[in-house]
Image (cartoon, rainbow, N blue to C red):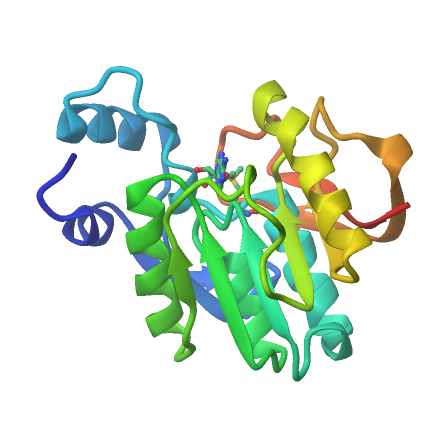
Amino acid sequence: MAASPRAFVLRHTRLRPVPGLEELRLHLADEVYALWHAVQVETNDPDAALPYWAFAWGGGLAIGRYLREHPEIVAGRRVFDLASGSGIGAIAAMRAGATEASGTDIDPFALAAIRLNARANACRVTVIGRDVLDEPPPEANVILAGDCWYDAELARRVLPWLQRARDRGIEVLVGDPGRAHLPVDDLMELAAFEVRTTSELEDLHRTEARVYGLR
Ligand SMILES: C[S@@+](CC[C@H](N)C(=O)[O-])C[C@H]1O[C@@H](n2cnc3c(N)ncnc32)[C@H](O)[C@@H]1O
């Protein structure tokens, strides 16, 4: 692990407006593979995770746009942003009037990025650095799940956890650009947005991303 994930994030990103959500600013990178290599060197781990935290993904962008149009979903409520990455969901929720927001991620660089990005947007976000998917649902009114279906193993665990949360009365919003493992039969579409992601990992820089509730 890097001596300081915070210093690493600052060294490899630039604070800039988010495409389509220009009122938010995030520490973002330009080139995923060069940064991934830097992470591997920094951590001395060839299997280090991709630096998801340095990009705004389609799911988070769609959720951010949806909350801008519908702030009442989070206004005055407690929000939990699962697989937060840069913290985009939690930050968008706070900007839309949430009373508190948590961002959870398993990547230590993401935790540093969430803190830096929350501060850059003058909002307070509680950072949770553990895998919560085997735990009971959190004390929250709304859970945001942006771009969680890119990986088969994560996908297998996320939907049952979200369904348990929904069954306990927590409102769930999913954002996704149509990843391979998205369980569309269990979702109901609420909105679609053309989004411009900040990573060239995407086949297309402009893509459609949707926001869903759980059926
Ligand atoms: C594609 S990124 C999405 C980030 C953000 N939600 C967005 O839409 O921009 C997926 C994130 O999930 C995180 N992640 C993977 N497995 C996780 C788990 N079990 N619990 C929490 N976060 C996880 C990764 O570290 C990564 O930051």
